[in-house]
Image (cartoon, rainbow over all chains, first blue to last red; front, side, top):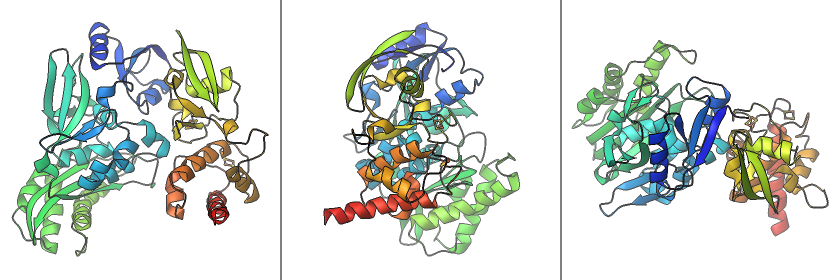
Length: 292
Length: 160
Ligand code: FES
Ligand code: FES
């Protein structure tokens, strides 16, 4: 038995929001691959809660391109759904790589991209790529809809900008942030599956001939929240791509990150990954040619 | 708090009263006595509790029983043929020595079934990825991979 107090299956967003507003003990549950485990492990804040299921709310599902060409990903899309979706496959393959690196098949079938972000973990495999895409997080409450850039959505470890009575409904990836870009996500972990990233690095690059026109580099587990390496990005833009430039990008990424020691890896090892992974990811994204 | 749910289990429509605190694994084992589905870790790490929901593999230890409402569920009991004889996947696990203590086997067979339904010609790497949510403490995995590859080959040959 899970140590919970009750369960409500919400069938609309407003039903879920009403319940969240009137019950201080309510806790949203999506695919359950995080919440149910924490409940079972009796983690603080996850015991005796009134769970609100949101998996049967149709508006939270599905992936589409809107009239402006922006990609909208419903919060309760499972990792498998994102990975196998044709829109994502043809426009943002690095996001397929990212969600495909989560856990194993069973976890990917249940776990959701919304849950991955809403639980605020720096190690979330989808998060760094969503950062590199300057994703907009759409949030619903009884006041209506608000939109927050994903960088502002993360407040600290396990802390996100969701207030009482609010639900993360979807992610919006603007056309200008994916069109013409190439990308890659590299998850460094001890095992190839069923593991949490020691470090994750996602890159989006737009290249014209050999000139870097745009560059986005984002990390997971390189700080308390996912983080962008803006200094390195600025340095890279306008440069002709070369081994030296790649090496300098790697070095500069250290300034924007704050890796720590954990049982998974030392700070020094993580810093080495922070230097190396963006080079490899850029190299993979542009189809090779550099010694990364 | 009890809740009535309706679902199809191994082809049979069922109406079941479940506790909202129950996992699907609890429901299958304790209410329906379908004890082929095993509990290993209880936290989504080992895949011993894997079942199919609408054809997709999930870990039933981290799946609320109430979520089964309206779903089509296949457990290991529904994989064997009605007369109790083994599916080709199961038979190959036996023939290739992919079963030692057997505790992980129901979960592996479920994951293999889903994998081969999706991809009838997987590479060894794709098989590894498809089974990566299942742990085995006995076999060292090679024989499990052999059993899956043999099934793929046999199915391919029987189609010719
Ligand atoms: S018992 Fe469910 S994954 Fe281990
Ligand atoms: S056969 Fe014993 S755990 Fe796999």
